[in-house]
Length: 395
Image (spheres, rainbow, N blue to C red):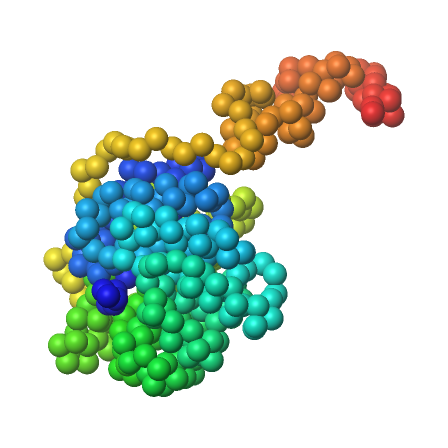
């Protein structure tokens, strides 16, 4: 059985102006990662905001990555879900598409008992025929403890774990507890800050977003470690720590997406609605990242450019039909066709405007208002009186 190892990209997801997966940019990302020497790509990742996507879109993302990869590196998609049925469906789909393995975290949203979490993982593993990397990410999902990893690693297709708690104690316990059961069990780091220390203790690689943002450094750390050049690996590890702190200084994963865009990928509009203050902070962060990332690349990899050049310009696949009931016709001028409703129940500005027009003429007065024109006091009193009357009568 082939078991992936080395540097694997936990892939961010680029979206277009309508919030849909941007196929062209995904294809660019795949080629960027491979050109930089990564060993694998992990689409449908937590940092890739897979929870914003329905199952059809997650499968669509796998289709694009597998097609563009052309069997050059390992593809290890996420199969996380709130219930085992969907995780099994995603794992089977990955197997059908020829993926090397899948990543499986504990069920999320509900705070389940440890017995239920382990039962979920075991049920999926026993139901599919594809290698599985367990995934401990307690920030977002029920914890996968070292004891669970110890028990589950005896299953023939549970081949490793992505350990993203950032806790070195967890890393050490997993390494020690699983090697007695399965010496080939892969421990892959999900916390880029402790990549080198974990390699030195016996980890076999990483699955991180930083591997996609700064592949030169993550691949460099791994190769330098394998070559015994620990001093260079140490310098690379220390060099990226300030960048990681900066990327984590804003709402996750937007800082990573801003950094990824500096490499030449159009990551599109955020899936979350950021207020003006947050957007200003993000814009400021991007400027800082441009300076810092450019500086460290020049220092350690002087032949590498910050912005990568791409030739891909067209999409190949038809976008999947969303499971959300929606319409392709704009019912209101400001409708964004977000795909979240059928347009009949929207309580948006356009509807309120129409109601305002039906109730009176003050909307037209507002639209035609000239701020430079002085209005006599009696007219102002008349307008105010009319507005008050309409407010009282408004239903």
